[in-house]
Amino acid sequence: MRALVYHGPGQKSWEEVPDPAILKPTDAIVKVETTTICGTDLHILKGDVPAVIDGRILGHEGVGTITEVGSAVTDLAVGDRVIISCISSCGKCIYCKQGVYSHCQAAEGAPGIGWIFGHLIDGTQAEYVRVPFAETSLYRVPEGVRDELAVLISDILPTGHEIGVQYGAVRPGDVVAVIGAGPVGLAAITTAGLYGPSRVIAVDLDANRVEMAKSFGATDGVVASDSDWREQIIAMTDGLGVDVSIEAVGVPATWDMALAVVRPAGHVANVGVHGKPVEFPLDKAWIENLTITTGLVNTDSSPMLIKLLAQGKLDVGGFISHRFKLDEIIEAYDVFGRAAETKALKVVMAV
Ligand SMILES: NC(=O)c1ccc[n+]([C@@H]2O[C@H](COP(=O)([O-])OP(=O)(O)OC[C@H]3O[C@@H](n4cnc5c(N)ncnc54)[C@H](O)[C@@H]3O)[C@@H](O)[C@H]2O)c1
Ligand SMILES: [Zn+2]
Ligand SMILES: [Zn+2]
Picture 1 (spheres, helix red, strand yellow):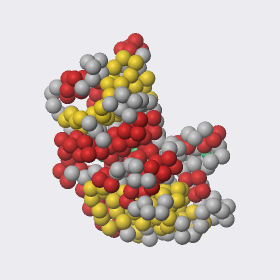
Picture 2: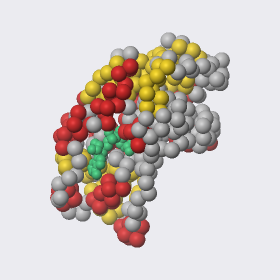
Picture 3: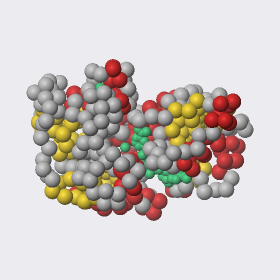
Picture 4: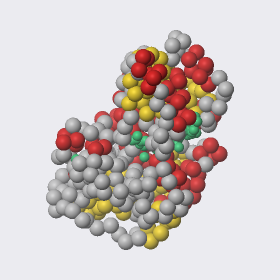
């Protein structure tokens, strides 16, 4: 088969590789029909995620059809159309039983990290992928849900919802700032709407993304390169700061921004994948009663999000800005990597 293979920082190629095979009775093989690129893939290519080795097939998002199942897989069958969750979970370990799938103790590669596709095992930017713990890591696509919407359940919708909105504890009436209006930030903006905030402020360096965010539920936008970006945000509150600030970029500057706009007793939810340490001003934070959360997506809210998607209650069709054939993936990376110029949000590759 053909796949997108990582060859060290800055290096990748679409090349011929061996087809995946069932290795364990709980595995399934999925023919990937739709996949996409995540901001995390860009971090990997920058060298921010050193656990990814030369030769690894990238990608942790996908939708496809099961072509083979291991002998222990009884609830899924060849021909089922499925969403591949970016988190693999055994369903049996102590963390999986708590719904903290991100720390599945049975995960391959490095027990204790549920995100393994395109990281510790081969991923979904390929014609076929082996899915460990298939029954607890794949979701059937409901009738009538298009692949390119279903693929948003692999990662960005649960990530924005769980690590941004749920960990940030967004409540009715809250003013929420989302720093970073890339696909993950937009997913946080859209799913924040499920909890009735009074205002959702999209903040990004890219004025186009700030504008786009308004069609996905942001009530306001601030361009982060404005010298008075902080004053603009504070003026949208009662003067004390936002109730919840969600960091969805993953660089020290945006971590600082998220802390700079939150009110005393507010919540800061970090979603971004950081490649460097940040300044943690505990000397100022303690007396402000701040709640600061971090996390790797669990995907425990995916079944709920799939239900909303199937009912047309999550208006996320506009997240997809560009469509490519699977074998045009190198071009798709180029477009996604230059989002400010190309106005890319989610780029989708399909067979
Ligand atoms: N925690 C998790 O489980 C998890 C899961 C998936 C993705 N992520 C992370 O979420 C982050 C966002 O992912 P994405 O796919 O939306 O990425 P993306 O690169 O498409 O979006 C990032 C956005 O941040 C903006 N930005 C950059 N610097 C900025 C600054 N100084 N001020 C304001 N905005 C700035 C960019 O213009 C861009 O719009 C990434 O770090 C990704 O790795 C985390
Ligand atoms: Zn991702
Ligand atoms: Zn587990």
